[in-house]
Length: 173
Image (cartoon, rainbow, N blue to C red; front, side):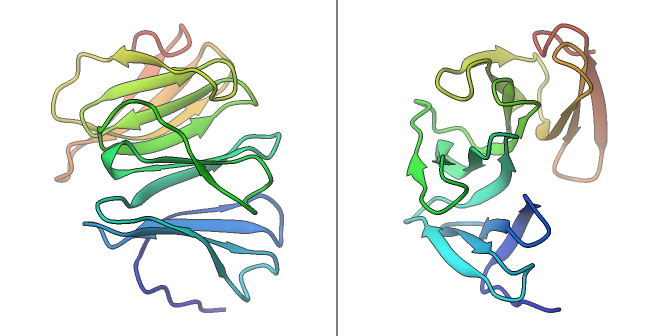
């Protein structure tokens, strides 16, 4: 099975054997979210961005609420399993590089300057956490329970680090 995209694909996320999403962009401006309902045989564009926005990551919480993040503080949210998407204003213009939900309530967004945004109410409100790290892009999160988790970072040039939290993401070591 091969599907050719006109723009770069940054993240692919399947919610079932047949339903999934891909997000990405051209790296400098426009972005997209495409969806499939037949295991990737066909893809349909469900949203596109205007100038200066592209998507770098996408996740779907267990309840089906989907989030995608990207350049310029751009966040799109779907509450209907990806049929429609709407903008979520986080009042930031930061380059958002990763998004992850542990469960329906606890979620994280990482940035290109190592700042973390955390929600405990399913994405309705977000708290900013300054990690104190300089020069690192937050690329991924994984939690084993609401308190213990891991964060993957890179310096956008070849070096990577993994940090751990034992207090729900408030501090990392």
